[in-house]
Amino acid sequence: MKSSVITFPGSNCDRDMDVALNKFGFVNKMVWHDDNELPKSDLVVLPGGFSYGDYLRCGSMASKSRIMQSVINFAKSGGLVMGICNGFQILVETGLVPGVLLRNKYLEFICKNVHVKVNDKENPYFKNLDKNIFEFHIAHNEGNYFCTKDQLKEINDNNQVAIYYCNEKGQLDDQHNPNGSLKNIAGIFNKEKNVLGMMPHPERMIDQSLSGEDGSIFFDNLINNLK
Amino acid sequence: MKVSAVITLKKDVLDPQGKVIHQTLDGMGFKDISEVRQGKYFEIEVQENDPQKAKENVEEMCKKLLANLVIENYKIIETK
Image 1 (cartoon, rainbow over the protein chains, first blue to last red):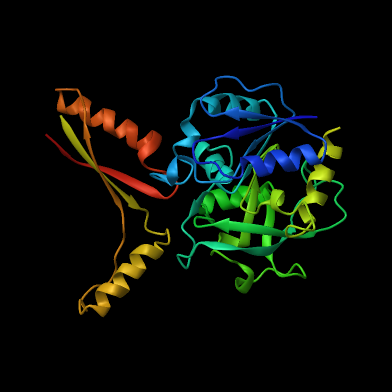
Image 2: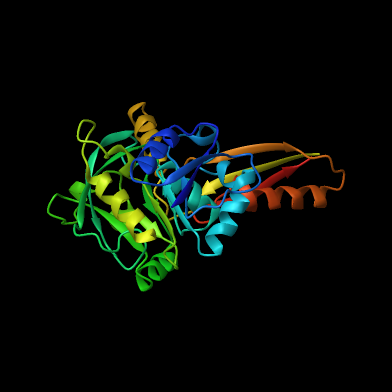
């Protein structure tokens, strides 16, 4: 399975993602934001970080960079595109997934482990998973998911929520909503479910000696789903 | 020509920064405020002498990059 990770100026989780993808069997290529063409890929990842210094709005500049036209075409033809953290912010700015990510409700940069609940398994990212609740890491200042009423209706009608913030038992409540996201939404799909944007970082949970291994379960399952 | 545009958050979008600014102003003694909303202001020099065309150019920029229309409105406030 071939993957590509796009590096934007200011990306800082691109190498972590490269390590994670290689560890679970992807043959990964790093792709520079100013390139024209994507290499042949089964999965394209927009990594976390602070692309373009978060100028104007997080992800807004990166969404217009040269490689993104190829990424958008790839996504529209059904290719798998996953955006993590800043990558999610870039995806919403392209319009590939609905909504926006606002400043965290309490104006704090949040860096901690959270629990998330998988909402839907009828998609290439989560199908065949035995678990529903995962412990992932979040580190962001703008992760407060928001969308219009019309968009929310469409999201619900098409079952586009990927993951929710929850407690360790999987219950959704305000106390376990770290950033004020609408309906505890932590990740979302496009209508066709080949594009996934999420704030949590599964690539930070791939080794027990780091901070946990729930990310390992995610990546291992993902590559098996793609084979 | 210089074109000025302001970007403001739509009514139903939470503005925590505006809220904190409001609280601080209140603490400083500015008691007669009912709300503060924070926005963005741009001055753009356009190489265009026709004010209508210059305005249209900046409107296009607002729609495509400067504003995110899910949460923000834009307004061209001055062309000179």
